[in-house]
Length: 589
Picture 1 (cartoon, rainbow, N blue to C red):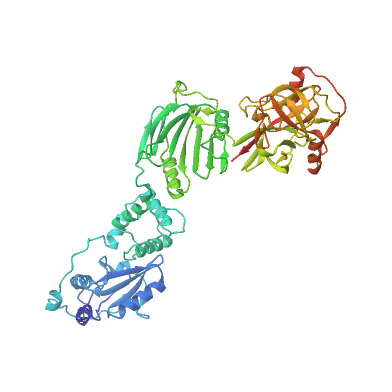
Picture 2 (cartoon, helix red, strand yellow):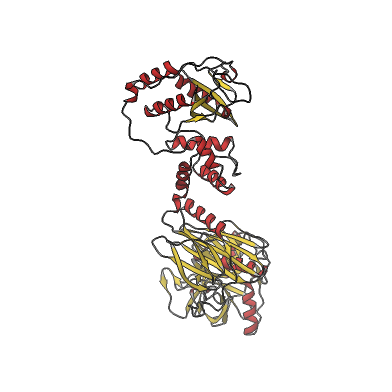
């Protein structure tokens, strides 16, 4: 049926004749203006030529013109306006042309590229054929399908597009880039690259590829782009207590409490997400201190990009289960910002949400009252209601050379993602002796210990006084404690010559610490309280002997300091002496 209709219209309207002078409207010999039916636009000449060739297989009045800026139109005509309306009606009804085809003016077009060699825009005036009074009955009576929703014509789309703000135009480019069809700059300028991207998006989504998005198509594109926010309930929240207003995912988090400098927004559903609003008075030093403190929190995994600037900082922690993003600014004696904690693996939604939160961040008057939350739980491992990040295991150790090498227990360094000395210096395992249960650590940077162990060459007397320095309670007390005891036996329970038995009440955290004589010389290293898989009775401990330890150090390329003198220090001096060489060894996930 379509070919019959095409033939009938072609017989009537074939070879339209017109006159045109450069810069004036196109008219026929009677002076009546002539128009075109534009049916397609392509972003390249090759694609336009291919389309023109395809249409010309069915139609005899196919022309192609440059639109400028790299776009090319396929148009039928030219026709008198009433003829053009009938052509548009029939061709649309039969599905020969797209429903968004429209009547175009000659002034829309530039150089003609199809048919090859034709130049209709500069033809002389000729007599135009008369259009029929009516189309044939079979065409008029042809059944008309249910009408599709009427969208804007390209001309109408351009008109509505011209009303867009710069921000709205840039947002469309961002959405096109997100859709994978645009790779250019976000400059709010709809040039050839953006038009090509629009045409590709239209083609992928079942629209005619005109390169001009209609109002409905723009809404569809943005709906696709923003679908990632479905179920988050993005709303502007003004927290007057914190002096911050911003967009928050209100269906995911809700306000819980104030614990300065944080306003806590905790999960309300199944999604394990949290938001902290950060608000306090202070200067740049205060902000830098906050930057350091936040890196000790459990909510901020140790790995991830971070940076401290003069008046802001960014802190991103990337863990296996969650990712936290903190953004803080300093202005006029106030420090404000936010932290978003989000499950790992949901990167697109997290990145888009962070951008929304950053863009919407609004500085209201005032900062969080430091007395807020005074009744909150107080614990040494809590900061403003947040858990401080803790190591998987802690042990003691002591410096054995001037470069900062440390001797500690083997169990302190096994299955660790990271090992630290005094929680500040990252170290690597230089040597491990599983049989003896000791390890040698090398710091990644050269250190300058206040004191290095000196190993006692003389054999201690039974029941002689000894002292052990160690971090009995991990790092809670901020320094090592010294515990006093005696030498009970110079061998192990089964006669092992590499062990000494001590009468000493030690804790797990003391393991790895130095065993000292009364003058501060090292007699050995305290071993874990569990021996051969069995816990020792209270008051019984074992130490690895100097001879065994020195063999391990020699294999690690370390020549320890030695002495054969026996001195006596006061308990206070011995404590200071031991503390200066003892370190906290931490094993982190």
